Length: 327
Image: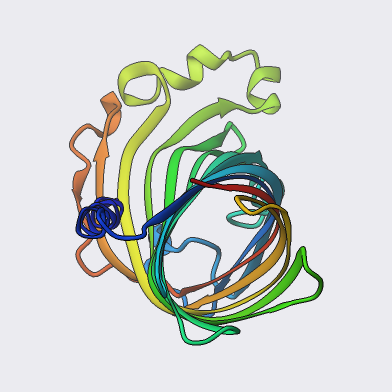
């Protein structure tokens, strides 16, 4: 994540330049309850092996999870900088049945992280203008399985197992309004817009195993008899698949919160934020496959004209409780 290093470098330069001046900095720790959802819609069949979901279908996934967040901020006059990172995990983002294709079964585990860098300028006592960079990552380990009949003698057990990395990177601008309710309670509202790129990288093993049918076994034959008819005497064919899809889109950002002042240096914030992302159908940047079993070791190559008709939508709702101490 290159922009993290850029953010830290900018803060370091700013703090050195303002060292002799009135510089205030703080540390925040918080807990976030996040409802995350993704919608994949394939409206235009592309290269079948690169489509994220089956053509002419819509797949929706969701997960709710908790994440711990850590932030560092600096304030100097009307200028404020902050870097924030949060991490959480959850199982079963995508549907367990009929995903990614009809008749398939699916399971997944997810590690999701978000990092943001924010700069804001205080326009007056109520309004601030904020700009920044954002990166969200979801690392999914998954397994897809299905079975289909090939002949009366055997069927194929298909397995797709690997890792998918979905990354959203973008820049945003937002207006923030705050006002005082009592001596110790403030409220704020935020509305913003974000332009992002979205990338899905998948590395997985695709496998097909020939399995004897009951009719074959009833005829007095065995599984070993069946696979002896295939090269390598296993009836197993596997490929290493590696491909990457990229697209672009935009998001609306809305936020609302309350700030309670414990002491002049300590506050507690209860906040709510919602993000809606919409991305166009992706471009397949790369697609490679390599046979790894005896029967298909020579099946190696790339697909240069791969396309996908899948569009992507993300949404996330954040309910956060944060404690901040100013030094």
